[in-house]
Image (cartoon, rainbow, N blue to C red):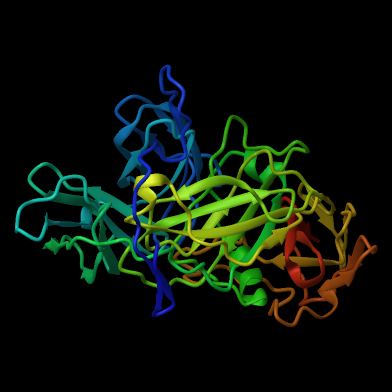
Length: 469
């Protein structure tokens, strides 16, 4: 085998190929079904609860954090759709999911929008001879994940129910070929035609490891994940604020969430999520990414495969994640030439790790307490926490609405970048309110956030409210 370095890639003349199943065993017997986990959001990333998520064989309803799980799906290309009525209007979205034989877990994001204004993207995928290519994957990358369409026997594809007013990065990918990437802006009710011409690729050596990986762990009180209603946009607002403080993408442009099984509660009763980020870089033979996770360094278990060349983030919401346990992650690029043949992964990124905090509970004031003067906020301590941040709003802190298009801003602190005395060091578990005057008869909302040094791990309490007298 001869090697040559060119443009940062090691090109190898491969003498032979090993044909085998990708990430599967070699034993006989029936192929088990695949568990599909996902997230339903709007175009701004706000989780959508109560959406009906369906495939041709089963359906479920998204939880209050927008998550859903479908179990036992057979292999093949499966259309997954989500639909909900919002203020009397139908909002929906859909995407294709490609499930490989023997694959235990898959993940997907579905973005819903007002059905009256949705756009469509359609066209053909052709090979070097101009003939249609079957099975090519067209990724339409929007603000919160990629919508997938797959070409048929004549090379035709169509992606429907796309959110308008968005500039999409569209990448066409097929094993054995080089990617073709375009950019397209879709307006309301647009029907656009876009044809892709793919060329054969050759083994070009492993794609370099993704650069600048980062991780941030979130622990969310179970009263948030289990309570009824669809008013939890403030969680997304919090995540954006704390990501900014870490220098992470406030609103990741490519997102996936991890496989889940059964309950979404951790062993201690709260949802844990580890968010991974890396720098997006386009490669003409990039198929997607593999994520490895483990409790030893370096990790050896592949926990997820993202067959999405536009991905630049991954949200691990596996219910087995446990507080105070250190989890190590590496990210590996996959190429369209060798990965489909023998399942080989690219080199590992730098190892990043996360140690989720335990859950935090806000204790007082709450449950519609009547408060005279400046309240004293109280909460339970969290092992490993270095700071506690209290946040107060004078109206329900939705991510956005007609009155607050950018999200309801807190009154204390006014700027999370300068928290002042609304933030205290552990082990202190209470503090006196020292913000703007509280108007008698008005309802106020508050929560407390625990964090470690550097805010690599964050724990959020449930939202409390009180009445000022």
